[in-house]
Image (cartoon, rainbow, N blue to C red):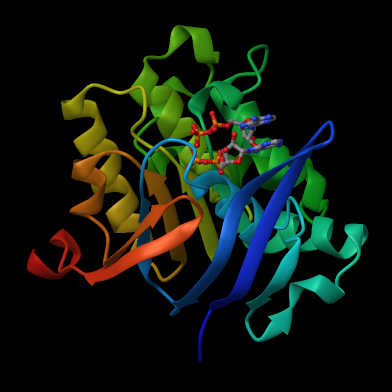
Length: 234
Ligand code: ADP
Ligand code: ADP
């Protein structure tokens, strides 16, 4: 019944011969459809936790289950399939490919899935751009778009594979507060379609949109706080 189960997870990086503990015993239970916020100071381990749940790296100790399946049993290829077919990533907006148009950027995941014809990929990418209200800008490259528009392209791209889990790292990071709110309203609408969202953030505005916040310090949870975000109130 949990979408994601994080059990006793530790992650220690090695920098040369120095061990850098990033997560020091994390336990988190995440239900389907939650919009979970990870808050805490820079360096507390938020990105590390997103990377582990997203199958981009392995825990040093402990287990993560997605839909009841133990991720540690998956090899690199199976993790790659999982990322391609089940997970959407909204990291920083500058990870759009600069030489490609908005439409082409959104088509990338569809290309890797290899299930749709080029025409169908184009049609689906256009629908996704419409969803984030950028269909008028489909032929612009990232440098011709504002920060908020680039982030909307990144969100459209993250949804191209119909992910059941969406991982967000500072989704409003470089945006002014008005643009940030627009992005959050968009994310809330997308979350309501049913995918489970996990967002690392420093931004108090983001936390208002979360269904639950976990506060992290030095790789550990300091408190779990139920909040009724805007999700419930309007
Ligand atoms: P946050 O996202 O909360 O800022 P991170 O997960 O990025 O925190 O980092 C947690 C800790 O792990 C920090 O001390 C950071 O310097 C360290 N760290 C993160 N990634 C690496 C890495 N690839 N190699 C070594 N240390 C890392
Ligand atoms: P955040 O914006 O969440 O704070 P960071 O700036 O800490 O993220 O990290 C950005 C990227 O750099 C992440 O992919 C993280 O794994 C990596 N990283 C963070 N700290 C280190 C480090 N000390 N050594 C190597 N890589 C790091």
